[in-house]
Amino acid sequence: MGSPITFERLLSGARDFAHLAMGAHAEGQTEVFLLDAGVSVERLAKAALVRVHPTLLSEVKGNDDMLLHFAGALTTPPQRFHTIGAAAAIARLRKIGVLPRSAELDGLIELRNGVAHLGASSAEDYLAPFVETICKLLDHAGQDRSEFWGSWSEAIQVTLDDRFDRVQKAVHLRMDQARFRMETRFGKLPEGTVESVARTIGETGLVVIDRSPTGVLFRTLSKCPACTVEAATLFLKAPNTTLLYEMELTAEELLCGLCGLRLAGTQEIEIAGLPTTMNCKVEDLKEVINDGPITSRFSEGPDLGQARGPVEDSW
Figure 1 (cartoon, one colour):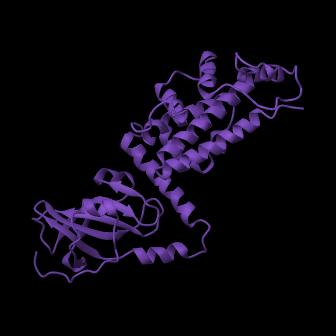
Figure 2 (cartoon, rainbow, N blue to C red):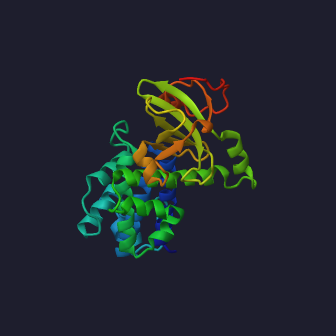
Figure 3 (cartoon, rainbow, N blue to C red):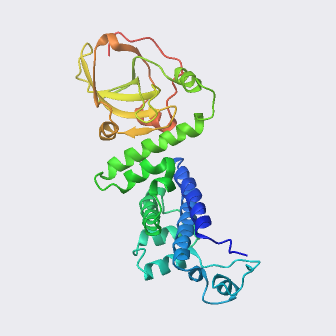
């Protein structure tokens, strides 16, 4: 009987857990991401060792049934499988020159094994070493990256691309994750559902939502750069010195009610491909409401359905 521990099975398991890890990262589930990412690395590391020789998965102490089985001396697999753990598999791959030393990768495995505390960690700290390690192992095993990552391929490319700075990577990754959430939430629903929901949460027109000594805050409807549906709320600002009949507003924040994309600041909005300024006139102003500061609205999410007052004659 052949061994159930094969390169193909380990590779398939690594792929499944890698996709689960990326999905958890998109949903902001840090602990789930760290667990699934660690399992994915472990399985692919073991797959790489199996390619060299199956005996490399055997522990050097304890019961020798696995060693004898992998060596072909025992054709019947043991009832219980005891192979090396993730840390040992990575250590052996480093010894044979497949993986470099990485404190971040070691930290990911420690978190996955429950050795380190989760409180001081975030998914962002470990996304890059996770992706880089998986891709190195895929290249070593002669496996196609696109086939392994599937729909996450674009996000993986952004993570690895040295041409992007940290902010650019963060924005493009957030947009890919927003598309994933969009597909997860609406992919299997009847045709027309997205448009129906968009009409419910979207509200056209330019609205004043707050006034302060530093300026006036507005909101308006915008097409989301991630899901491409006109369901995003774009928050804009103008200084108090701006004339009402002719205004140049600066984009400050964006929140999509469908895919959950959030962009903070003019730089992120520009990276996403949206214009950072908008020229408006008094005719564009729809109404004035008192919703409080924009920061509190972003922490709670936009409530587009609350009652509003009439447009004021003067500011």
